[in-house]
Image 1: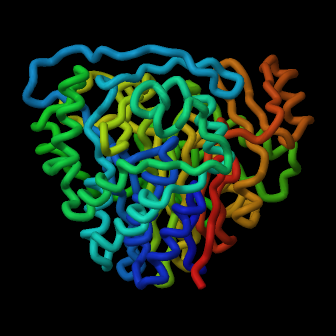
Image 2: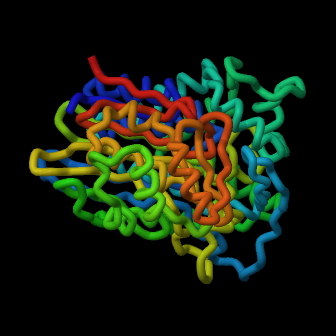
Length: 460
């Protein structure tokens, strides 16, 4: 497999390639690219996010999951109910309810996870991995079409407070082709370069705790002291003559992989109907997430997914860091939320391996559409023999509780059959952010998702 990087923005991918060509491995490139995404893809993620990753070490042949998702805040304080701001946002054709505000912010995990991945598997110095993101923060970054479309949907939150100066300078929302300027991120990334723990015990922590206290958030110093990323063995499931290594939990991916039908040789109608029967989903909420997938020349691989949720609408003044809104994500609020405990997540970065070794590294964004988007692409590559770009670009459908959503190009005979079964079908006029974003590196090539202005590149 050729060394490559796939991600959600050209600057993210270029960063990963730069690190690989400077002697870094897959861990180094995934860390640097994820940091770059915290500058280039701030409508999707940010430094105060949570994440999940899977890493494959070629020398040992072992895959490991890294949990750096957010934790429930409130350690050391009397329990109190979060005071959330409720609003509705038009997400494509859907009016979606959100809960945001300072009290929606959970304990960030992404910075700790990136440092843990670098320390355990990387070979380049930490400061070198921060350099590309810092350069992007100083220079600004191009704002692509899909990000502009996403901002237009999420403007009520993204411009609620300090974000107005970033995303609507002069009172006008950024448009495709504009320059995204976040000068405060320079100071934030300089602090991170000096001290990888600055979000937990340094200058960023102090500013974040001060903002949370001022605006009645739930974060405490004890939350930051207690936070640690967790390494664990992945869930492995047999598929297409090999095995898939991923995570379980709310993702539902291992269970769905076990039920995936054989698709090779089916016509378009048969394929859609066969997948529909295993792609049912109990809920349908948006997800603002991104993923980086990397394979290096030695065969090491990493898929790293991160998210702020929607974002709380609050930014640390002077640092341009958006607070996450995970405590306002209704689909993640399962059971009793104990301070210090990990929140659940639908993220499912995955690897595919067979008798010849690594065959694919992939991850996806998209909330409840993450699973269907990711596995349709994986099945297209591993079962149907598609090239990566063809699998990612193929029209998607998603079964929400009350309607089947379909992009243009989904087999019309299959959609008519679903209507004949009594289901409502919504035919979208164009490919859309709603249907998730997949980034994949495989033996069949590498691809980022055009629905979110993603891209991919190989090393020289």
